Amino acid sequence: QVRLVESGGGSVQAGGSLRLSCAASEFTAATYCLAWFRQVPGKEREGVASFYRHAGITYYADSVKGRFTISQDNAATTLYLEMNNLKPEDTAMYYCAAGPPSSRPWFSQAKYPYWGQGTQVTVSS
Image 1 (cartoon, rainbow, N blue to C red):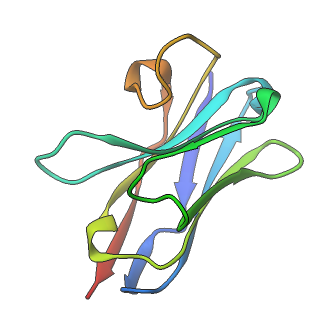
Image 2 (image 1 turned 60 degrees about the horizontal axis):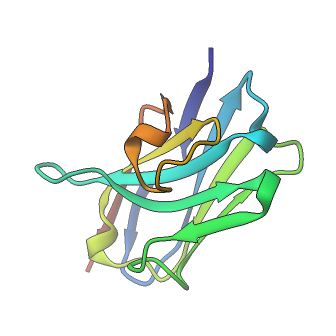
């Protein structure tokens, strides 16, 4: 059973930075597709960044390109999301997700059967 545990959320002022971490248990992270999603109450969960190490693929939502970086440690047990120049509109609960490769779109929630519990990010103006 895959378990994902996020950490690193918090409150920052606009322009600040945070690094989210997602620790994984029992999965071959190098062969799984990984992603970060976020959700604001009352809105649909949206994809932020995705990563497929085996194929060297990274993919970002337009709203975070140039500000966020998704990466994985060499041991392939932890997924990161480095967030710079944060904006109030980045405020959300952030979730990491994992799943075996499939033909589903990178930001389709159905692509990822495994999810963490979420970590809150709050950006004040």
